[in-house]
Image (tube, rainbow, N blue to C red):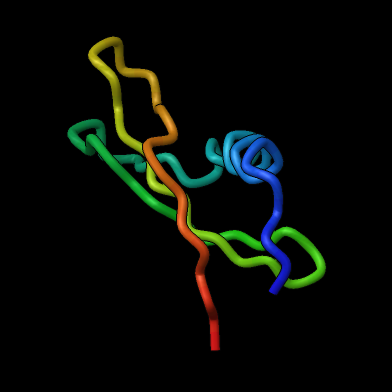
Length: 65
């Protein structure tokens, strides 16, 4: 699998995060899996800051096999 540039991974995760924000107002973190075509798979991990904004805390390569 080709590793994508950090900027592309972060921009992609931030562009789609709104589709994964938990409906539970008490939730303080969430994660989701996504693919950058053709076959680069990642897991994004978000947390809420003191103002309630969702911030990308980390991402990792997700080797789906």
